[in-house]
Image (cartoon, rainbow, N blue to C red; front, side, top):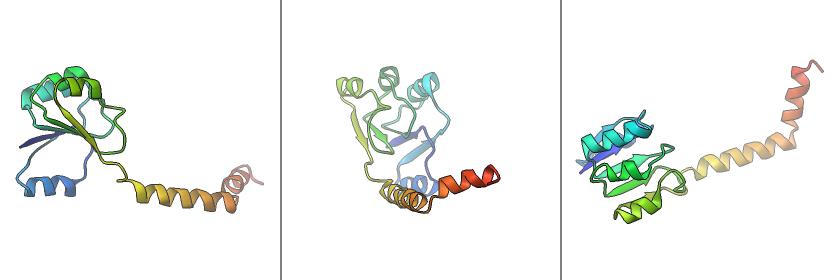
Length: 126
């Protein structure tokens, strides 16, 4: 199985894919026409993206069988085109749950302790 990863993806996750005998072509800077060309030339079975937009042209450029968005939602993938081409689309909801919870608690503490107002006062010399 060949996988094209067209966005930033951790080295440890790429290593685990390689250990599972999944061929990994890591090109984190692909976008637009470059992505469609890479799909056409590498003909991956799986395309992994995070924020990179995947349009109908890219989906039709090769033999992709699965598009995975390494994040929640499908807003960067043309799901209708994928469906029409028989390509499955998946995502990874909840993968950032810990980070969201940490941020929520940090914001609660910042509001409770008036940190934004205090920081502004400090910058303005008050």
